[in-house]
Length: 394
Image (tube, rainbow, N blue to C red):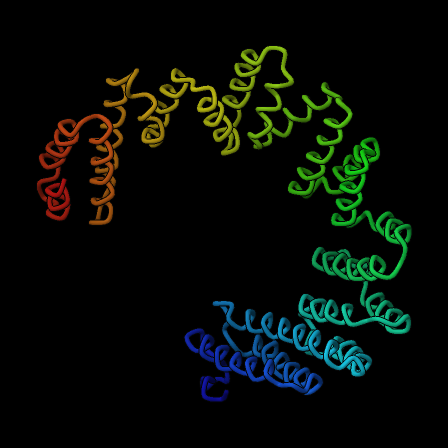
């Protein structure tokens, strides 16, 4: 592989793909190796080479990362075939996997180490192997760290332990394990969904509410807990709580809850007016998006016209709906928008974009109106030959 190294001993971006591709060809030979243990050894040599390459190659393209993942997948396949074809080698394979999981090549790459441990978990069969695996994984968990990535790593390791309990322990052991690790979102969610299936809605509300508090600085998770709490309110027919939470979720940007709000409302028309006013007075892209979705859902032509008058760049979104009722207004707004875009255009790509807009305008309001705008632009920009060339194609 020295041929890919620059004078500084580094593989440049332009050569990384070829380097990874050449290494990847080894995977074919590894998969064809009938000797399971031998194939594993070859795969681990390739894995070490690929992971080490992160230190001396520009992997902006992700080719080396893909090679590492493919190599780990090959190890999984080789191991599964070896255990199936030569069960007598199962102990040797398990020991090799557990030992390799401690290799220094994984320093700084815990995600790859955990992937290998998952392969090891699939091989573990005897009580002794299960206990060895449990001790190994437990030793890797660090509950004292406050680092977010470390917390994620801990959660993945706990998932490995949980899956081992699920496969080899009792249902009560598995549920107790979940209860003991509710500080991790995947376990909390798993328990909540388990309770939803069992219609234990009060426990769902409690668990979801606690999740909202513990994860209050993580908006994505908070939204998840709220939606799960909402499902519990539905199950208990708690309409008032359901309506309040649906409105909260709606105002936070999830338009799908508008339909639930209408179904729960005593006066859907008044609800529309109230929500429209709230989002109209809001700020940011969420409020603007909700307002657009609302007026489109209710086909509110008056508000659509007012919206495009205030936001001409959205004229093309609404012309088809408004042209029949507000033809003169729409033609004026559309034309002003095109003229503004033409003023801002400064190269052939920009000119082409303006001309495409004129063509779309012509299809909606008539070709004669499109030609009228094109004529105005020819008059306004006589010294822009590229623009005139594009206009001649309309």
